[in-house]
Image (cartoon, chains in turn blue, yellow):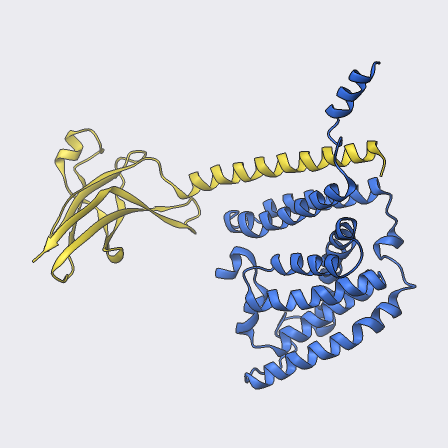
Length: 234
Length: 144
């Protein structure tokens, strides 16, 4: 094979000329677009059957898992470990106390009644917290183990990748204005902690607990039942 | 990441994009047919300070009555069934029988120019979603 043929073959490969940084950025855009498709197009047009919403979600998770495998990322690197649980929790405690305090103050000043059953009125608090932990774990896995890590591939560890991760998390909660503010602040804290002490269990615990506290303390009208996407309007 | 793994990742990203584009296209087509009845036909014949008249037919069901809504200057004014006597529509073979006309009494309007629009109401198969389809063209008229 002469050099011209080799060059032509190389150019015909889809990965030719794509750097790791651009590939990581493409992966972020792809997963974010899947979530937006689910939130803005399918959940609104699917009618009563919501099964179609599972298609982009499944595609996104397939990409995420394949990406981990192809990049050789281990579960430990992704944050599925116990040795960083307490250090991560220590970093999370102060912001959690501050944000809870602010939420309670806003709730008190706006005359909202503190209601720990508001999130899922018909369920036990233990079940609510377990549900919050599970849902938080899924969100934190996508946000930190994938988006934060790919953002670090593009911009490196530090403020920019933390802010990009938080901004993406906030944008995915559009057009709910208060939820966008809260998720941006939470996104900054969680992305920062993940970069310092990667631990999904601590982040999921924080996510579930903070959601429960915010929903219980803030006026229901402010969070609009945590609705996002086209569902926010109806 | 080696070049082989990178190529596989690119293939996955492209395949995912294609599947999502097809999915959105499919949903858009399904949504169009769920929210639109391509067989509605009709004309808004006349509008003045007294009445708004015309006819509307669902050619897929030429014996059924179409539900219509009148909007004056983009505001809802009235709803009715297109079930008035219009033998000319039947004679023109646009309907299965003579009863597809509509007549609305025009609500009280201020002096000046106004626009009447009549829409056919389309319900999807479950009846959960209703959409409005313009019948004929908007009709502009003046009230003195």
